[in-house]
Length: 508
Image 1 (cartoon, rainbow, N blue to C red):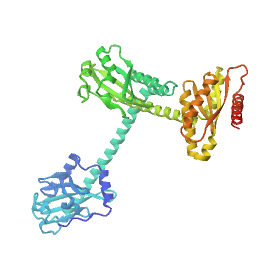
Image 2: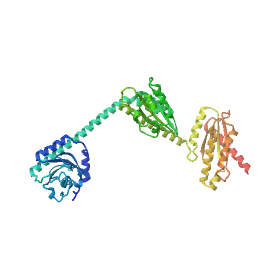
Image 3: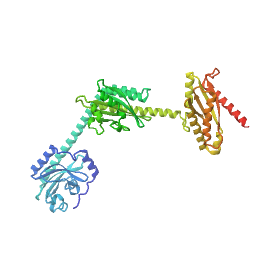
Image 4: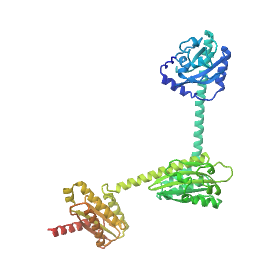
């Protein structure tokens, strides 16, 4: 049994067929009417409107009995689409192309076949309108012309159907745009307020709680809360609730983070809003919530800030037949969730950028830029503080003998040890090279030197060379204080080098 060869530009033909969106659709009267008309006009017992897909022949409409859907290699129509002419076969049993086709040797026992291709305006043949009979018969030229005209009517119907679908799609799109415009107008002020909240200088916790309250009021939720996940712990804050809400539902909602199971536990790490229309039917519903009158919920991820993940929960109780979550509710909840998530990402990126700008890449402590800024703030505040400037003695020998990688290690250990030991009093800065600075709350010279000595001991553990520190300390707040940052740094620098000179003189 020879199979029909593929037409030229087969893949372009398949794309053209797909454009009509006709395959695997339900019967339509407009096409059934044409197959019935073909049967009456041409006086045949069987008519089929077929489309030839990549590996099959699929019938959209048919008149008569018998199963005619088949693979493409068993398809008469696969031969029909090779030409613009009608394919007429008077006796398929005598035709070497078809004599052993299953539609010939089995039901519906086709002997006479004639098919006119369905030719699109671009010239692709996507299927055929074909007639058949279980008796051998010649289809004269007039009948073939009629079949060709009927196939053209099928194509007209296909084009009309396509244009109607396009038009309906455009209408639906316009309706959707109008609906979205109305929702935008209805919720514009709410979203504007939410956006304003995200731009305030308040903490992420305060921002997300305020957003939860505003959304709860806007969508008339019975209860709205904010869950904060941190590690294995979770806390909840009530953002808004209706004054007449039942105490049982209030109590259940307040215990959501402590419940060992339930809906909220599965929402960690998700980035899309989840809607529960009927809480009773949810697989993770808790009987306590059902008994308390918990009807529906919207769970809106508000994003993560640091180690804390925020989840907004809006709930409705059993209050009549009002729909749980209308399209306008969903639009606002989804938009608000995206707004807050984006704001937290921006805030985290900004703080990370600011931190990176203030951080020394090698040691991880604050850098010279941070020092200049913080020193200016302390001097503007007018409060007493302790300023220390220090230089690592012997550091050059570490680099020369043990290498720069080991020298970097010494700097890192010294910096982190010093940061840890003074963290209760202030901050340590990498001033430059092997120089470091301290800005501390008032501390005696002796105490400040004790902290530096502790960091020196830590640094000595990672090198075989001797390292020490020369420290110049200025107590800001005395009567002889300098009056500007540069004078303060100059005085500390002078004292540091005095200490270094005395130490070197002692060694000599």
